[in-house]
Image (cartoon, rainbow, N blue to C red; front, side, top):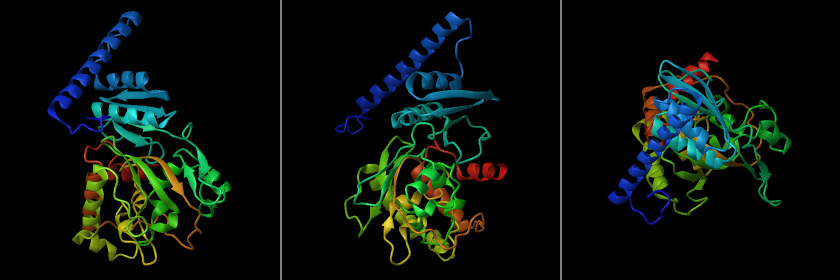
Length: 332
């Protein structure tokens, strides 16, 4: 189970994982007790305090506890490597903490939830051209849009230069547009950490790339999303000139002349579907017109699609809900 590719989730393995978590929790409590003895403080008792202790021990990046009030806490992580986010995801799942992308939503509290705000801009900001022959760039989530503009990607010429590519990808207003028109972003591939700890690659699909979906998680996720796209709610949303749902499920039914690209499912996702580890972005001409800041009114069909897409990506609620991001964005 876990790192062993030959394990099929048998009961003994599950028991060992549970025992390992119990031992880890006991170790944290002992560590807290020793620290309390040396400093004269009370030992950590709340899940939030145990979470913070574990984060300080396990990540290489900078971890800052911001506040603890009314039973919920706020902290920030500046990950130094991708593995820091993987460790943070596991601890957030263990202690019931929301993992949220900094700047994707307001830095205010998510009501009733402890939140770990993850900021990739300080260290995970790499940008490099893949090959001299191909006009495509490997981009880490903390890269600023000014760097993409300076690298020669015209779609970022008039974007706010201080915004990170992760925040740009998550911003619904930046990707509000015509139904089936998701190819305008230039995003061609994405590596995404999902709430269950699986890392998946999303890219060209179908006629453009006939390789089978890699891994059981994708093999369950993608067919289910295609079923949603062709459901009654999906058909109703496609009747709108501008896509009315928050999540761009219309990426699976693109306009004629454009192929299916699974990475476009993440356009405007609000940081609610997963943690984007890196992207491949190609230069495209900026669209002549795009609706910015003019949301189409939600419908029963769009709300149904959004709820089902969220559940298929993040059934555990590790990442923020769309309702949280929408209400917090209004407060900014």
